[in-house]
Image 1 (cartoon, rainbow, N blue to C red):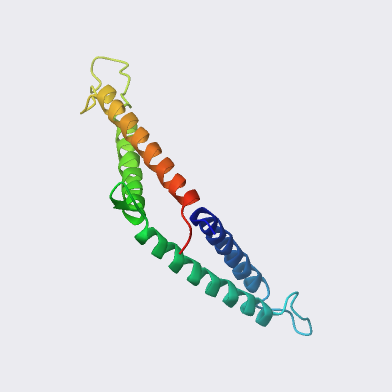
Image 2: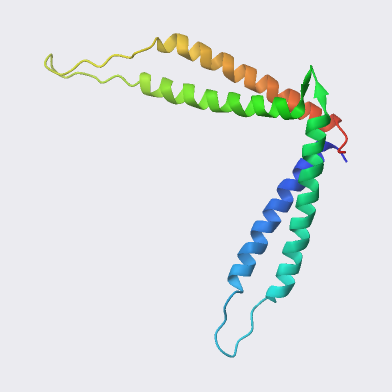
Length: 150
């Protein structure tokens, strides 16, 4: 199984667990004399099986990420770099949005509002970060589809 397939399976298991939790919630109580639409114990059994599968899959994914090295970095390091680039890009974009909002004045007595940075230059930095993030994400995706899960 390829790493990318394992990641898809992990996402499916997480969705399945969320659905089982919802079904358990819906079958937690009934009116006197009624029976639940689904037997809670059966749902718990399936939930436990899914969680065990997820635990095993996460361990294998993490092991694979730690042992897969490309361009001198493990996949774990590349994922951390991607996550931090994402965080940096969101912060820069948020700041640029705020810095771009200049207030129109109706009269000369109103306070002038100026940007504290050169928004045009900041946008160039944002564009470069976005490109770097896309390239790194593409590289990670390529590795995911070519790497066998350990």
